[in-house]
Length: 217
Image 1 (cartoon, rainbow, N blue to C red):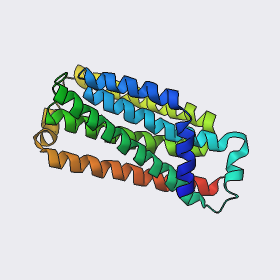
Image 2: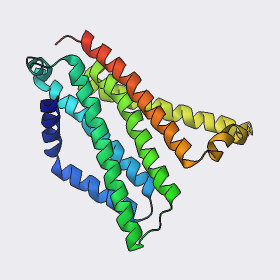
Image 3: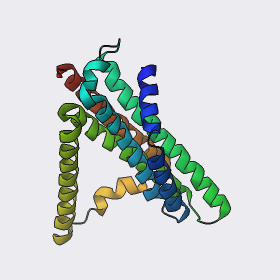
Image 4: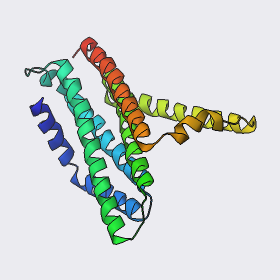
């Protein structure tokens, strides 16, 4: 697995200009008071880099060559999820560091609630994106995987907007249902988000392993 991680990190580092642009945009968002969006944006972009490594592996029958080495399909899938977790952790750590610098410089004033919201939001974003995209990418390949992933996320967004409009039109009050979440303290919210993120990744990992075991190269 160590070799696979080194390979993928070297592939990612070939995109230095792209990473630099993402870093500049993220710093700007954080410095202008958009902490939540800045950290979620950075985490989402870095998670997409994990998906791009599968495209590199799959190019020109690369998978067939890759599995001539002493690695199992299960280890291959595990490495992709581990890489995603590492990149998400780097994004969160970098974001928190920038938030601290910005707060000390007083160019923007962030509360503890905003810090927690930004960190948990980026954690959920990375988990949802990796959990949904990796199995599809492994199942359909680079090109079809992107199309299927984009289609699913668009459908989810449309469904969410539709539900929101229906609730609004019907004058349904969801405040009672949301009350337990609003009254929960920071520790309970963090624990709930962590459990949800781990659950999503665990289910996705099992599905991805099953997909890889059935693939023919």
